[in-house]
Amino acid sequence: MTRTNVAAAPGERGDVSRRNLLLGGGTVGLAALAGAGRMGYMWARHEDRRSVEAAERAGATPGRDVHSFLSRPDLRPPILAVDVVSTPAGVPPYVFLANKPYVGRSVGQRGLLIAERGGDVAWFSPQSQVWDFNVQSYKGKPVLTWWHGRTGAIYGRGNCYIADSSYAQIAEVKCGNGLMADMHEFNLTSQGTALVDAYMPQKADMSSVGGKKNGVVAAGVVQEIDIATGDVIFEWNSLDHVPLTESMSKPANGSGTSARPYDYFHINSIDVAWDGDLLVSSRDASAVYKVGRRDGQVKWRLGGKNSSFAMGPGARFYHQHHVRSAGTGVITIFDNGATPQKEPQSRGIIVKLDLTKMTATLQQAFTSPGKLLANNQGSMQLLPGDRALVGWGAEPYYTEFDSDGSVIMNGQLPNGDQSYRAFTGDWAGYPADKPAVALRANPSRGTAVYVSWNGATEVATWRVLAGKHPSSLAAVATQPRNGFETVIVANSTGPCFAVAAHDASGQQLGESAVAKLD
Image (cartoon, helix red, strand yellow):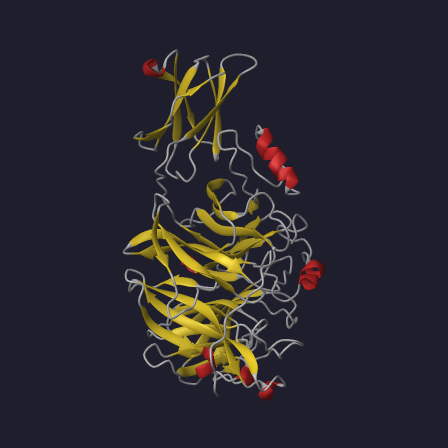
């Protein structure tokens, strides 16, 4: 097959449903999702008036769908509706989301969101076009990772980022060889490298699938990049190893041009297999490819038209996302089963492979009581104790399951928002800035002090200091932290106030600047 590279020209696109399901409602937003098309990727406290007005302009309802904080009026993250059924020992305390609109405008601000298990905000960073927010390990330490860039109708063009526990960026990972990172995958390895996907429009003969002889196809590209040096140490191109005939998707009318390449493969996840090879997920082939990390050869196929494995009952999947190795011969998959619909509902599944008999057996399936069917996106994270967190992609939900498949937590974004993937994990944040404070006179007596510290996860108590002058402050009140913003009524009129943050042992973590009551 002869090919030459052509310039990519992705079109800009922007971003579906709330509150008719938590632990047993009906299917959500399917008509709206179907109308949005296959990809659809673009997608009760005192309220500060500026936050309220901005949220109303965005079509959201402050206090119901969007947070507003007196101490941080610049932050308007979405409110999560969370039902926690139980919290088994060892359950991670935080959920990591990159909220964005499915179509149109976001509810509140889009951005990177760390939420406490019960739904309260732990950290929020407003950013446009961010995907795949996660906590991973780099150089033996927990780090935050995400993709940022521009998304088109098929793929994205951007870069990947790593931040430390102070939320400071410590690395920017870029694709090499003239490519830009797609939004689907940013997976760190224990070798100090990153697995990143990209899309490369290339000229190709599409006649085997009923297309143009001189067409343009979007090849799926894997790059393994040395984070420290930026060097590409491995690259794999789907067109060199997977023929167009393996695709489940025929060229649409008008596709196969440089402006609209034929998306035959649609790469959407990469992971290191148990033996060091790579697991590459192709959505449009409904298959997982085991790729040799040394020579790039396809060792076997799981699913799709030419599966190397006999697929047992329930083991077949369609248009999947987020394939991960979970031990020798064990794979986890988010099975969309949609667009076109192939299954009654989407699933998070564990598939066991017999690598001698070449059979694939469904070990477990996690399904939503609301029978959610996600047209695209989604994630399946296997947790200690055989629990799982499933992010429902295009549907605005994430669900944590116990090992027996019962729901132990369900979270929901506001109507219109979604997160490409959802993850849970441990995190300790120590922001470099200071706590933020806002003051209001208390109608009955004293002063209401509003305090927050975006991303400071270790704060246990707040101590209010007050005095007539900034140089003569003394402690007047102490109160446990209560959510992102804590309101403390101090028996003082100041007019000068500051607030100090303390951890559970009583050690001071930081202190706000002095604020003066008007």
